[in-house]
Image 1: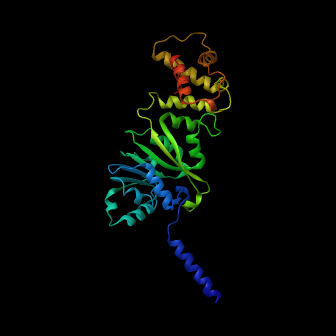
Image 2: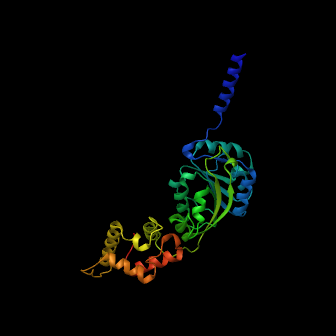
Length: 305
């Protein structure tokens, strides 16, 4: 009798082994709650003429709901096993002809044209994917994305909030960001270790007329220690060396003579004082403040990239 039980246990184990194994390296957590799935699809406000980009469709729980509302889906999936599962799921249905598969790492893939992006994505690629999305052209209408709760809170954080950071400022420069809903870990299979949230990102069209790399260069400097004054943040030797090098390049390209007694520290403090930001702290400043600071430095010939 004990032998039979042991044998039965083994057979059950064997059946489990034959199912899909979710890979940790791909951050696979399949959204299984139909109410949450429907909520995300509804919030995306998909039109019958839309092309939808879905990142990480997995076994297709959300894909089959999206396909009912749109003209076409471009499903970007890194795991060929998941692609096979989804193809099998829609085989012989009208949905099959509306789904285009792109197999590979979305960060290394050229994104096609799309109107809406919907994703329950691997959380480890959240930050690089958001900026790949926001710098994508032509512009899309909106993105409804699932993120780790704390990452989502950083995206929507306002000046003075504890989680306000470089990510908050950079995202809000390029887009309007709204927190839509919280999603508990038990809505996924297997459950992740963290809570999740759904966020809506709508690009600003047209975007601010600035060089994003230079903007990010400024924001990096001031958020290294966001609780310190800007005056203190600019004092590091590495920052001064970078600004002096870029200033000399600017002068050379514009045939401007560099003063023999050039004092970068003094010039930086002068700009910050004149603009009234000398004693301000990064955690309290909004996008308009950083645009004003960047403009003041640029007018004086100082660049951050």
